[in-house]
Image (cartoon, rainbow, N blue to C red; front, side, top):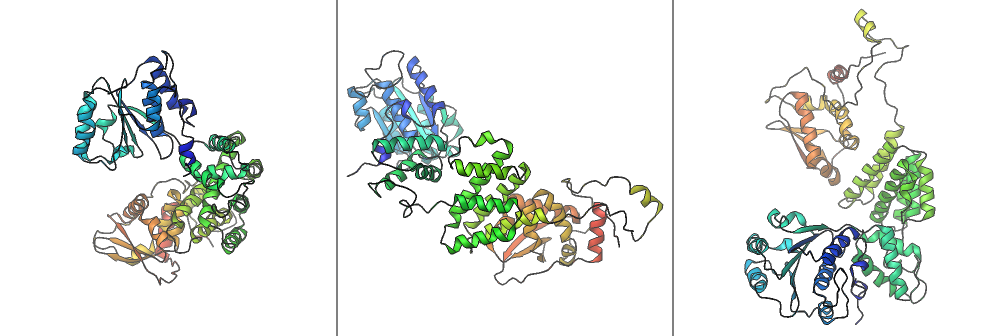
Length: 524
């Protein structure tokens, strides 16, 4: 049976661990100085080398041929061989997911820790996924961590540090593993390809590195799968059955349309990709990555030096960055990222991305009405005080301050007509907090006011409803409505499949309220 690459080439020295030098440097110094702690806590996402590092530490401190001042295990003595093969009686690995109870902890860890090592210098307990232990099991383990035997070393590993009690964390040396940068991961994969005596193009390695999300194990597992596809040169065409083709060039094209505010071309591109059978979620993910590079390029082109998307793509992104600003690039990243999240639950997978393109391009091209009327326009009423005030600058509406509203509504008298009348006023204020959120509400009117001043808003699509139901978004809307009507307001959402389009109608009262709030006036 073939051995998976991540097992076949598992690091056997600290120097072979990829992308975690901030951790290996500290551990090697401790080993060299013989200043070993009694408990370690290794935390971080999956596939970064936590268990591997734990085994290396166990091997290094028990290596019989390691000389004073050295830190790497020799990998040739009997103790190193036993630990590498997993047959050492003094290195005990425990899967906390399968041993969650207090009885397992007492029998496997606490009782065993009291006995001296059978052969080696230290008895090492490696507890993987330690966050899975029950509260009572953690309490039992805590006592041993407080007063550990001199010959016992505990190494805890977890992917969910927030589920580990602070009492446990405070008694361990904590090391946080970080996702491995793509360039480093590509170099690691290239080295494995060379050892396997295969030929894989740089473009394929870059795709694997991007797909792995910084996880070494995921990258090596995917590489192992790809190496079985052909004994000849492996390129992007070869890996198509396993990995959908990269749409980086299409992503750059899409960004060009966003920068040029070409809504129609952007939507046509999305529809063309759908017709070609492209995975829109994969495309959207790559689009976010490219927009991130665009944002970095607006700050400094040097920030793109280590990008793994290729020189040609970097060059095109650099050109586009000269046509946009940091603020515009940041806005694109935020809106498209939101669309990626919404597409996971959307009934029409490409719809959130299409809406995002419209929001980005339409808002950029839409002329903003001036707060001060043109000098040629004559107001309906013109007093002496108005002439004096017209030369004074009007405070911009961009300030995120809810204007004081003169009218007041009693807690029990809020009606649907009152909310509809001032809905546009809500959107104007909300736009300064979240432009995308305001755009969503612009096409969704309140449909009822329930008991307790609960404003009900109806939605046709679930992803719009989920956006409003986000805790921070809903709270902001409730706060603004509360200020507007001088009473506590709650927001509830409902999903209506056959919801008709409802155009927004403003009464004279609503227009007057907006003008009064923002210092505007009616002109002919």
